[in-house]
Image (cartoon, rainbow, N blue to C red; front, top):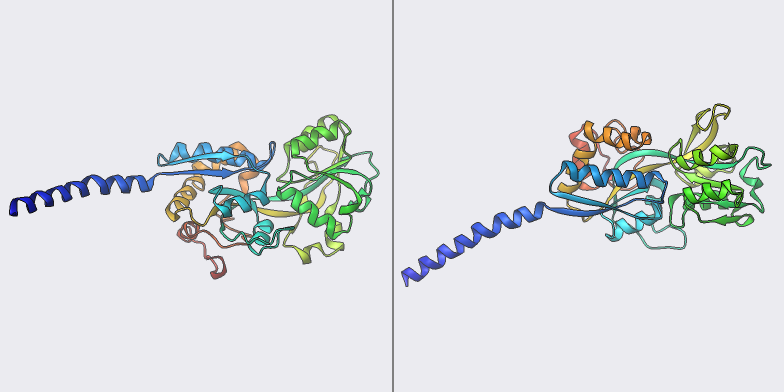
Length: 327
């Protein structure tokens, strides 16, 4: 009997030795998806760069960039766990969390912020010889507003509805590259982007067509748009799209890298340590200069939803005080 007991004890001990390290090792492995954005957009560039850089520098994490309509779709997918990470605008994130997205009362409250990436200004592009001088002049025009489900399309609808002109023009849901192509071919009269400048699609359009940016900042101020939504007034510098182009007043949203609340805190923390390292930030800027504002100093400025616990740990370790409403 004693011999049987000792044999059983040895077997149990052996199983423990085999299984515990294996389980612990497996727990450290993580495979995830990053929600990007439309072709030709900055979201797409970041998602692809992140999917390459993080696994290259972290053996236990594998990531893949997946197609997405943009910010609004990412808010929904990340909250649902269909994407583990995603780029989301602050305004879309806040509205989604409160169940206030257009025609959608669902509360997408599992999308959590990680860190600020860049500001995304609204840019309304028309031909230089166009008679369109303000958003109010779009009546009867053909306007591309971004992919359906994108932050660009959502911001366009918010802005133009606020000005009571949304139903007065023919809006087309086209991504940035498709919009630039249609614009060059004369199939649309204007197109709207919500993205860092200079934007590649606008540059593509300006190569063949003389363009102008419409001052949407003046209308945003005049009609109380800033009282209704948490957009920030900014100015696109003169010469951004050609030496002759003057500065243009507009508004911007803040772009955040977000994560699903169910992603382990240590995964989020380690991803951030990799991305916000000197090497990581250099790699992101090499992918696109827009990401130069992704810094430790900017941290989580403009966050509109709570930070992921892994992000809280990261920012507090880097000397940032996280307000109680963001924990």
